[in-house]
Image (cartoon, rainbow, N blue to C red; front, side, top):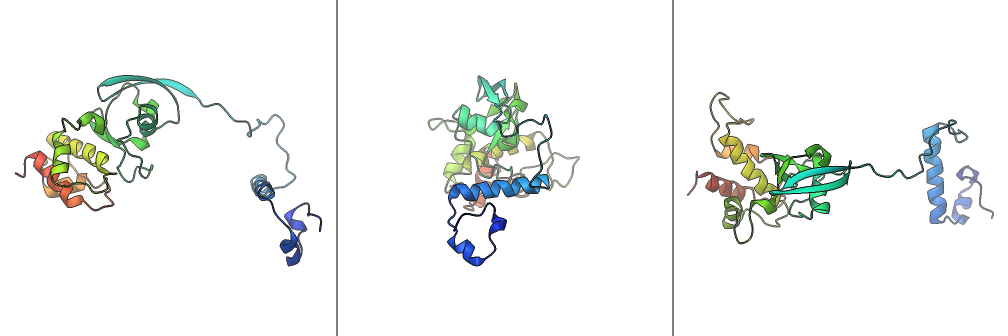
Length: 229
């Protein structure tokens, strides 16, 4: 049986059984269907002078200077590059993790100009001149940051994937409280917030731990804050 010119040429179930599709044929049929849906007609022709969208456009790159963990970095990056990808792929600071890539899990949390952010939600070019602190900049295996040491002491991690973001967020949380920045659970907005269990849990709620080490994380943060001996 000769191949029909289009899928509409198949009128009997036997035609489908006998027809042997190749991967290329399926892709062509899918592309043709998509073109028909978008144009409204299979016979629609491109507007005269319309740019050929099939041509690959070169990426737009710009120069950006960012201070990462105390060292000034000069790079040329695609304008679509997120801060997370700049850290991981361009500078090899792989301690910052890519989790959901939608700002929902907190695994990519870093400290920018003293404030914690989800690095997957900001473009690198938006951080021109910024000071970025990642987990690598907080401490080293030989000289741990107090928060890192507390996480180890109180077993504040299991698989460890979310831990860099948890620790960066925890450090920033204590700074927020010291600066008097209120949270959703702060009872009196005219008074300085205190390091309470409710405050810590509310402020850390954007960092997801799928292993469920939340209680140990809260204890570690409390110890560093000086509310637990």
